[in-house]
Length: 400
Image (tube, rainbow, N blue to C red; front, side, top):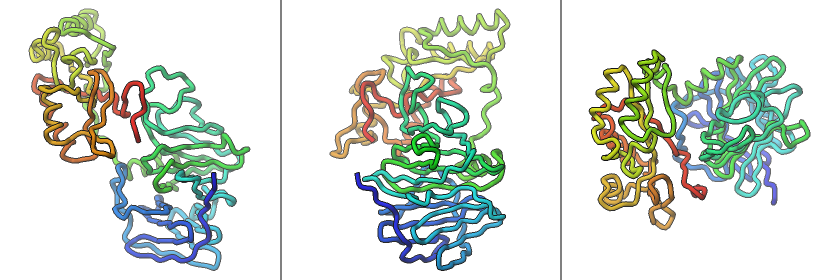
């Protein structure tokens, strides 16, 4: 496969808080979000809408830079980004001039077909932490990982990928820290010196832009503070969710759920929550109750509340293909389901059998889905366990 490398800078301009840099092969854009956060996005075909599912902040309206024959330098109170012109390279330093992270001098950003990759210099003694839910050592050095949300029920201590994707890591070397978040929804890759003879690390994705946010705050806690400022922080959880929660696959009836709760209280074992897995539903159809084994959900929930228990129910995104089933009929009528490129509704097998899947990219679909939870909240359910949202379909990988 041919390797296409971002070439030499041919021109640049600053407008509306964006420094745009052009080469013969690509275009790069630089944004400043705060003194410690700089965004770099490199593409051969930018989307003018520049969407992000993760970032909730806006860049600064303007910033200063200096130009020399060799570099374009952007300096904040905390960071210096030195952009090498020939060839195009992005090198980050502290305000005092200490190197934090640099493009590899030989490769920098390049394309291998549709895949875009950024090779970085690997510092002596450099360590890496992050990527969220991954197997392996806390120190990611000399390991490589794939991000592609996967239903992995039989995972081992070496399995990769797993259920979730957190394309964010922190590098540590020379008494310094930096962070990097790759904002790209394609299948992505992180190699922390696993395959390059201890010379480079690299990250990239199967398509889209090489779009990353660089964090230059010093200290792991400060970098995480900046990352959560950029992408948003969850609301404080309810106090009851911090206690012991009893969950298994699966309680088969309301009587069994109540017996479990009563036994906890009888034996004086502290517990605050009981979970219901898929068997509370009618034929595994979401937003339904099994009329035989959970015939009076409100009565069951009232008894749980009298014992100071909360109930959490599992929620799966697959909508069973079955005429007469409320959510299926509404989804078909309103055209709410995800589709193949030819317009046919995507179908996959999960717990209920053949299913369609809501197109959660659309706001009206998200509103419809949220309103359907009244079937669970009206009887008194107070928590939800989102399952199989990788998205998962049995026996195949869902098309990207």
